[in-house]
Each structure stands twice: as C-alpha cells, then as structure tokens.
Length: 431
Image (tube, rainbow, N blue to C red; front, side, top):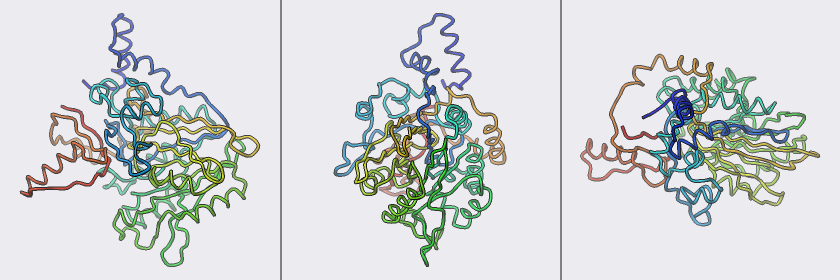
C-alpha cells in the first residue's frame, strides 16, 4: 500500500491514540518524523547543495546501488561503498530512515514504509525551512537539472528553469543542459536567469580564442563573509554528448586555470572558496589533492549520496569533498564557522527528502501542475505493470536494464543486446 503524507501521518496518529504497536520501521518513521529536519544552526556561512535532479519534479522511488565498482586505489573506498559497508563507514544505523535513503538494503519493505522521495514541492519546503534558520544561506545547483524527462524535453528545459527559480537557486553549473544546444543555454542565461541565478564554469572556453563562455566564479557576501563559488562544468561534455550541440565550446578539467582562479578569488578577499563541480566524485577527490585553496568541492555527476564529506589533504591544507546524490532525493547542508578570515570549523548533513515527512509547498505545486497540464494525458498513460522491482542505478546491470535488453532482443530478433551502465533512472515497486 502506498500512502501520501497526510495518510502516513494519520496512520501514526491513529496508532498512537489507539495504543497500537507499530512495526520497527514504522516506529522509526514516527520518532524520526519530528527530528529528521531539525538541523541546528552552526557557524556564519551556510551552503545548500542539490545536483543531478534530472528534471524529476514529482516524488518517486529511487533505489541506491548494490554494486558500485571502484578501480585501483578507489576499490572499497567512498564513493564505491554500498549496503552495510557504507553504513559502517559512516556510522549509520541499519533500519533507520537514513539507511533506507543511502542504501538498497531491505529496499521494497522500507520503501513501502517511508514512501516516495524527492519532488520539488517537498524540496522547496525543506529549503525554506533550512534557510529560515540560516539567514543568507546560498542554494547551489550542480547541474544535470534541465534534462531527464519527457516534459523537460518538450519544454526545452523551461519547466526546470522555472522550478529552479521558484526554488531559489542562487548559482549553478552544468552538464546535460548542453543537450539543448549552446543557443538555448545562453538564451536562458542572458534572459530569464539574468540577475536571478548565476551560471558559472571556469572550464568552458571558446574554441577559437579561448575566451570564457560563462563567468568562472561569483563572490557572494554572507553575514559579512565573502564567499567565492567557482564553477566546474562536466569536463567531457563534448565526448559524452554529441559535439554538434556545442560546436564552438571546449571543456576539460582545466586544472591550471582552476588554481589561477582560486588564487584570484583569494586575492580579492574571499574567505571561503568552494568548487561547484560536475566532475564526478572520483575526479573531485583526485583534483582536491592537486590544487590548493579550496575549502570544499560540492560535487555531482556520479549520483553518489555520501553521508559525510571526505577530507583530502593537499599542499595548502585540507579540502572537503561532498556529493549530494540525484533526482531531488537529497539536500546537502554545509555550514562553516569563519573566524579571522578563514574557516575554523564545519558541519555537514545530507538530508533525505522524504515526501511523506515534508508538506508540499503550494507555490511550487502550482508551478509543477501548470507545466504538466499540457502533457498530462500522455504522461499519465499506463503502459504496463511490473511484477518485480525495477531499478537502474548500479554500474553493473540492473533490472530495468534487463527489461530494455529483453525488449531489444525480442523486437529485433537478436541473440544478444548491450546496455551501458548509465546509472540513473527512477525505480518501480512491484505492482
């Protein structure tokens, strides 16, 4: 049985009033409902981070991987930890709501208990709640936001642009946004986003003269503290995506230019410097060891929901590396205490967005319904019912991949079919 938020909370109230005993997972849900998002304020600089939303405006089921292969030195290290190994590494109790959010353990049973995750209307409520306790907090979007649904394709990303503006995103970088073409991206940046949301990417240049396509960074003041956000778009966009989308742009990691940019913002007085990255976590971890002057890398691309930052030593000190999952399932909250012109301490929390525990924001709900209305009949068409759990998240096969492969072999009368480990896609529960 699937429940919406009201039904979920009514069940808890009825059980409590009637003296009924809930099972262990329901008891966790009841006790954690009041504390899950009670995040005490810390420090004087707060950064909220979302990434890889992939145009998923509505709540969904999203199963984390049971296989995440790491190569060489990264084998058995974050982000290549799953299940019990991940829980042990980060001190998360099995059977808790966080354990359900971070892993695939007992997935179907836990999903039926806790319900769907994500949804921009529920995310909006959480963002407003966190911002209310943290005046001046910045909301950063790591990209892969405008693309990933039929509706986003049909509106050329306008539904997601409007949703991000409603959400209050301050700064973004990008990857799959390039699928709409250079003209569309610049049209949005110079039009509806102008003065409302900054698009930053230090590693995107013109092919001819190497001129910056976007601002490499912005410096925002928060509670009297200058904070620099440097952008890092996906460095291999013209390899992973058709080049004709952005024929006049070049990408790459641009490590030397990044170091120059860090040095530049430090000279301009930035006391906190973060990289808003779409490199992928393995690349971010390596990059953090090679450049200095970054306080944190807020990363995306590989969809890793990592409960705590990974500290990486470099010649300048230590850089914190985080990754905030995907599909609107998480909100990362990084708080810094800045004293004497430098970071003196930090706290971090990766908050799961449980739709049953967060009221839907009315303004965002209306926006989502308005964009969905022209396509509702097409989007609501029932295509099939699944007897088993369908998911597509690991880097080594998945049940949704198998459905695709079986269909290809049947329709094409082929003896073998291949599917790339694309690692994203929503999950469907049996029935």
